[in-house]
Image (tube, one colour):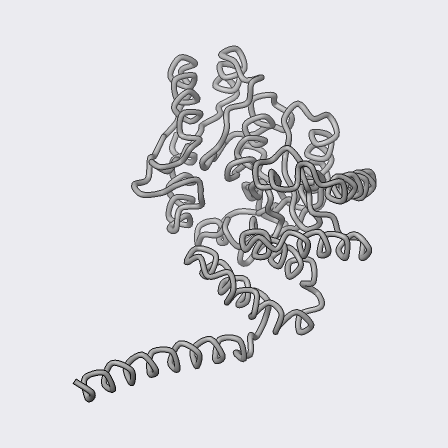
Length: 342
C-alpha cells in the first residue's frame, strides 16, 4: 500500500513539474515580433487560460514598444475576465496619459460591472474626448499594389479592398490576396477615417465625409495609373462589405463588380437602386458562413437581387461563422472569373 501511494505522489509531482516547466518555457520564449505574441494570446483566450496570458504579457511588455497599445488592451481584457477591475481602470488611465483611446462604449455588456463606478464614468468620458479629437484630424487612406509586370501602356481593372469593422489596412492587405488579383489587377487597399479605437477603424453608410474620400481616392488613382473603367470592383468583409454595398448601389464611384463577405444590408438599399445598378452592368458575388449571425442579411440581399434581376452568385460556406473564409484567395479568383464572363 505504501508503494502504491508513493507511485501516485510521484506521478502528481511529475505532472506539476511538467506544467510549471511548460509555463516557464512559454513565458521565457523569445518572440520575434508582436504578431507571435498576438497569436499566442488568442489561443490562450480561446482556451480560457488568462493567468498564463497575463504572465506572458507582463514578461514581454517592454520588448515591443511599438505595440504598447495592443499590450495594454490585452492586459485590460485578461484582467477584466479575471475580475481584477481596479487594474483595468489603472491601465485605461495609463493609456489615456499616453494619448491612447480604447473605443469604450459604456452601455456595452462587457462594461456592466463598471456601470456604477464613478472612476469608470470619467474614464469613458476621457476616452470619448480623445477619440473625437483624433477623428477631427483623421482621413481615409490607401495603399496601391500594381500587377506583376505593370506597364502604363496597358489598362488594368481595379479592386478596392476594404477591411472589416475594428480592423485596419493591415487586415485588408493580408486577406485580399490571390494569384489572379496580383497578376491582373491594380489593388487599392483602403483604411477608413472612422476610428473604432486607437489602431482600428469602422465604416458607416450615408456618410458624406466617407463618400467624399472614396470619390477623391478614385480620382487620384485614375490620374496616376492606367485604369480600365469597365472593371472596377469593390470588396469587403462585414462592415467593409456593408460600406461597399452603400458605395456600389448609390453609385458613389462607378462599380462594376461587388464582393460582399458576411456583409450587412444597408437600410438605404431598395429595388430602384438595384435595377439602376443592373442597367449599369453590375454583378455581385456574396459569401456567407452558415453559422454567421449576419446570414439573414445576405439572404434578404439575395431576394432583392432576384427581384431586381441582378446577376449574382451566393455561396454559403459550411462551418464558417462571421469571418474571412480560410480559402478566401480561391473565392476571390472565382468571383473575378464570374465578373469577366459576358
